[in-house]
Image 1 (tube, helix red, strand yellow):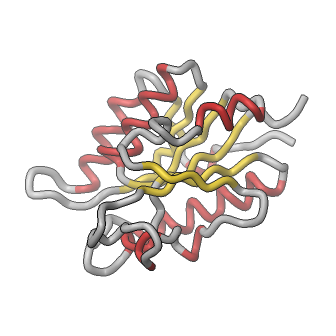
Image 2 (cartoon, one colour; image 1 turned 180 degrees about the vertical axis):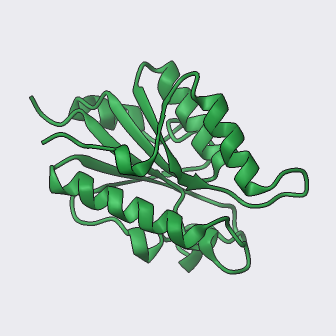
Length: 176
């Protein structure tokens, strides 16, 4: 049987990791995602990148340098890149059809932004019947006035544990 697990990389665009935005633990997150992508590629698992399309003038406006996926985790030949314009990576992207066509039923989720795209995509994936693993130390966000990034990450790991398996990157495996 083929690989039924894919690495789903959300919004790891260059603009999210600019010094201007001060994403929490950005360099380490990029290292975690890069390591998981390498692990997935080594056994032929699919890697699907979902990139946010911002409005004109925004840092993630399509075609701008900030819109591109960060060079430390850039897609390689054979990887899938989908564009979205909402927090849910399934909405209007064809993601579900791509997963079905490949026989993928298990998703390992990493990326940005914890309280938005990561949370919404995990919820939708679970609703659609996918087995979801959220990489506990593989997603991040920003400090906000009302909550620090580290607290938002912990809060969402706890909340999403009701519908996803929450595991550190060191425990993530892709079968051959």
